[in-house]
Length: 370
Image (cartoon, rainbow, N blue to C red):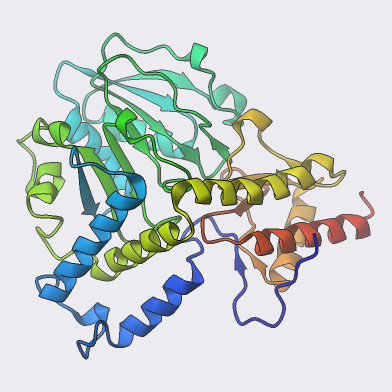
């Protein structure tokens, strides 16, 4: 496959987050920064209490409900603080005294979620991939739940290590599944009835940084702890339609545009096929390469974050710099994992992945190590 990105004023963004946004969304936002809806002022200037932003917020919620089949059984909440705040808000709201929360630990972010929960109540590690340096997802038969936990928490996709749950693990009957889906939400169909709460920082597949989408089952919201500060209760956001305080209005606006864009591409099933094609193109090259190699067990590979290496760290650095000069940006791996990483979020195109593979093939052919 021969691809080129020359003759354009934008480069390919393979960064892990904030990640690439769809170009049609950026163009629409560019226009609405100046004058949205004929109002004479831009989206950044509108009051969150005004009628125009009320419509923006309502549209964003409805686009999300339509895209992912979110029924009235779930609240659609927009909360600041990123996924990192959710690491604490989940146990604050859902882990009562005397109960245990079970965690499936598959990388740094689930470790951080567990750390916060331990400050707030009793936890149990039901499975961990730490012994394998988080290069594989634990098999269902390796999971050991604690009796009847208050909830089970997992991270659906591991941005740093490049692993992803291909299918959700079974959980005990009646136990809510809570998921940090920051790096793969809306990249594939969502099995919503299997979840009690899903949260996702917007800056990878949904929009810009600064807002977190939370889909929370109504019964869990209403049954959550009440002796909490207002801003730390899910019911506050549900009751006030995410307008208890001034929200990041622009970020919510962009999330609505991105959800609408995904729907226009054919919805979540079409997006999954598109993402599968992108990942397959890169993984197929890695599997036959004598110079580059994938870092993850094949059955656990992420379709969002493809982690790989060359024969040495020095050669990794050389390739990353050369790729950036070619307009292929953001390929350096996370500082805790090293190596290289190409994040293939929804807005990354097949053409851009093809350009990356072409350059990798060219680099390998010219390398004395190949």
